[in-house]
Picture (cartoon, rainbow, N blue to C red):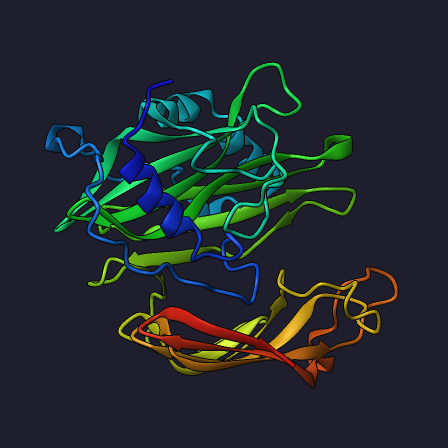
Length: 327
């Protein structure tokens, strides 16, 4: 594994330290990175290594059955394409620490398996003044042959990291249970993500979510149509294909420690959020989500949801989380 300039690692670690949960918006928290400093970073800048689009798993909008999902997940040719990005530039554990769990808070905690490793690909995505690099996290904890468990897309400008988004997941749990996130980047640089879950419950596929790269280099949710938007988890106004103004979001929240709230039976929160040009803005208020469950399936009953007690607030400026206060 090659050595990397310490300055590069310092900046990348600084980028990571400004993130919370790295799921595809399965959590109510959506924390953005802070601008990097002026330290030189040695990313590959050879435009001959820019990838061609589209790239990723095609027809994600149609892959909603078990068979169609497995066909994509088990596609060896697609895995070869991903590995062909050349994840050669390794990052040492002395500077960046990775947790063993796939769904954890950043910055990375110190309780890690030392065999885990991460690497930056040589091939990258060119987008105007921005370059987007693929960062792979390898799982070597339980398996003889390491495999890529997560891939993040890191947005940079002039060799400075700006933002990052997890776009790929291959997590294998106990008893054959597994979670996957597949991605596709189309010719217009719209990033499509879809989550799949294989567990003791019936096969679950989450709605397709799309993201765009803003003029600031940050990632933002993308919507096909402007106007009012509403589904079982969120509702608000879409303007210029982005979230705008006040939104209500009722989602599972990874920042809620149930041990601190023994009266809570689940980690769901009712969020009153504010967006400006697709990015978090102003004060976000997280309340306990009160809801009833179906006695047979155990699933939440959407029409029973209502706002409970205020748990904490977050203050944003220009898409950056500046303060979080628990009540």
